[in-house]
Image (cartoon, rainbow, N blue to C red; front, side, top):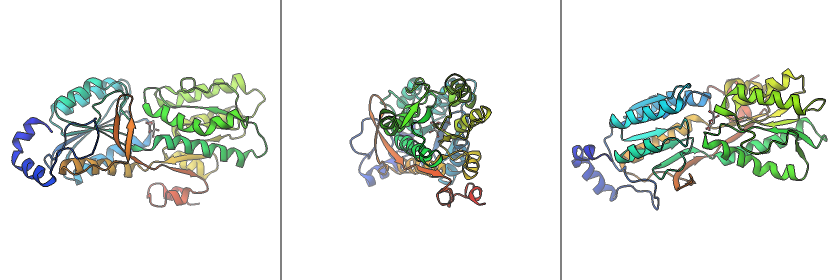
Length: 364
Ligand code: BGC
């Protein structure tokens, strides 16, 4: 809690602390230092990366409305795409200077916020990492996300199921692997989750990575940019797939999945099994039409609601809801991890039944 606010709110804070009996109430964590009870109409900063996926756009709108409904003064900012890291660093500093109590950060680069977290700590601002875990800092107070390792596991399981479904009896299946941007700590977590399922299938010869590119570095997609995935797929098809069918591709998200499918289509291949993530409108349509094989549903409404709940718990000085801890390289960050859902043509209607934007796409 900020010292100035503490003085101003001494009366309220005293009552709140007396009622709750303590300051920070989550047990046994090193990450945090502050945060128990602040003004009910406090300013809350939300710093989101550039809008590389629909979920970021939706999150911004939901934070604007949800924070206001919860009585807070929300300040939502996106980093621009040309200088996203610098923009975000600047935006966070400005939020701290303006007196926010909490900053929710969807990091543009999960390794480049050290100075901003120092400044937040000095000002007594609580930092919640949103969706992407900020690395190598013991000043991240909380992390709210979907279980990203499980996202990767689900993607890989659906890839194997899809291969069996679309190309039965054609083992070894020819497969290529894609991972996300190296500046996003989620990329390696998704990939590790997927490889925990795929490595045994590579080892026993069920799938064959024809390009031989199997590390997270070799498979990375800079900036999560669709054109980078399409270029890499084009190159691999030209160099390794002359006269060979590509059966499947591990794609870490929908935006890249559609680029990969375009590349395979341009090469005149039978549609390979391609995974995804985010339940983007164009990909849900593609899945329903039988083209993209799967996606992951990470309901952004649930993630934003869980984050705002956390802010409200901090405001009230209540115990913060956590499901466990996540290792960011130097510390275990108290985390609230939600469960992702795998979606294919078979369960799309059921999976999106409660989502008014996506459910209509699943109807014939
Ligand atoms: C998010 C994904 C998203 C990707 C690109 C990741 O950190 O978890 O949902 O597809 O960033 O924006």
